[in-house]
Length: 195
Image (tube, rainbow, N blue to C red; front, side, top):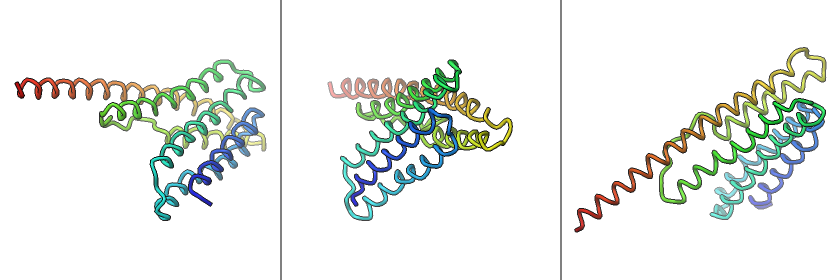
């Protein structure tokens, strides 16, 4: 099995787990399925390196499918809250988490594509978004097994992810703005010195 196949299968498993279980409020089982498949994200890169098959295509595919998987997870939460969860505010927060996660990744990729280092990680990156939301979803799912009061972990976690993603987005935009101004000033100085 190739590293790219592992990436594709892992993403398919995450998407299926998120969109089959989460919209029905089956947060525990959805998180179990997602967690099993999310480990493929760790395996595919190591596998490619060990086989000497690391490539730009593989890195691009992995990064692109990470966005698809993240979209399915937060989309699954939004579908729950829009339907049986009957909470428009939490539906909106879930959609904000989905969108802000995509934009946080985009700001770094776009900044790097125009030659800037984007030398800031930010408060809440992908790993933090996933750990916070998946741990909370898994525990919140225990409510269906009779654990009282625990279902509130998911809304709290989504608010934390939303706020943290907003802070991270601001951090990255400010960093790109600063790095861009510095690069333009350095180019002007170099141009003036050459004359």
